[in-house]
Image 1 (tube, rainbow, N blue to C red):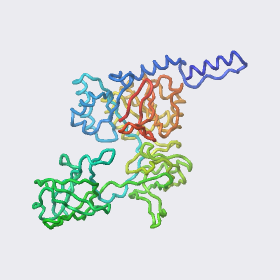
Image 2 (cartoon, one colour):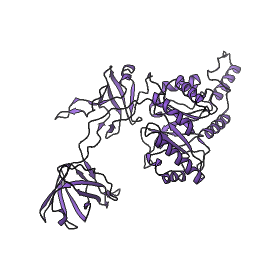
Image 3 (cartoon, one colour):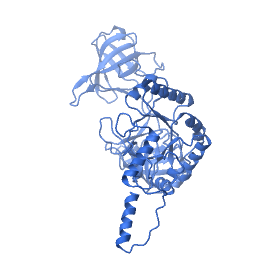
Length: 483
């Protein structure tokens, strides 16, 4: 772009009386389109590694905790095309990371497929606070085809327990959709095919069919969607008996938010709660949830945007003070979107006085410098954030470590690119991860010159695009999905 602009200015000077214009602030020689593309491709390969199977594509996969104990999983990921393994330093600990690194290096050597390791520093945790637990409900539903026809009934294991006995109702048994504890005698006399009837939490009459008896309990099937709650009664006509569902584990709470709803973001450590609504449907009190860093409240202003959960839910600040923010939801699913505890919060229009490198990040960085090929810095807002990271890598003897900068606001992008901080004294220019869901900023311009860029996009499991991008996909010479 810079090359094209300078050519246009040169032509205008020749055909008219155009005054001299100071050169742009960014340093370095302007390059043409081909030279720029070649520079980006070259530096992208140096940072991310040369693509293997897909033309001009690298595939980055976030490693689950199972990758620390299951080497076969890592080998399968490599065989499936993974070229970059991502370890999130916001989760787990050093022993787990060490084992992940070991398994990746070992699998790479065994398969002959190169794989780089990137570690994400946790950064400042600006997240939603806890929520009141939801009512204990466990559900199980049969599988149906696109036309709603039954393909396979739900498999439900009823486990006998003593009344009040603590029971972890998990589907640990293979091939079951739900494990439900119950109390009651006489169940061992039931025969396959016996019907157990009851009214579930939805208020509908439902039926379970005994498939077989086992040492674990009653193996049953259901052709309709069941919602089990503590105290639900299951009745058998012959022989006449009653079984009662015992205590179930509490479920994680959530807030269902729709466009037009209001949400109070507070500094309280109390559990958040849904909106209080009267019998006529009028909202008496808006939904409420806490914020892990309420100190930012005094830095935002009414009219500025706010985003939750990587932009999946968005809103506008209506009012702000030191105790709370009142938010009007403007972006959510047509049927509402669920906001849960520990979800990220972003203020795309606000310059926040928060450090990109926390004390925890500084403590983790020596491990990253020793084991990783790339480090990702979150919440970059100003050149000093990048300079501090460069300085620490220099002290650790890793000035060559690849860097991914996650720039999440328009102000941060302008601050860093205007100063040239993104390419300052780096043998490999960093990759710029622009969370497009919240920035609306075009980053493919002359200021980045030879830096690879990553823009936000996301595809659902069925291949259709989501209306709100959530994670990054590298474009142009660098193309990869963040999964």
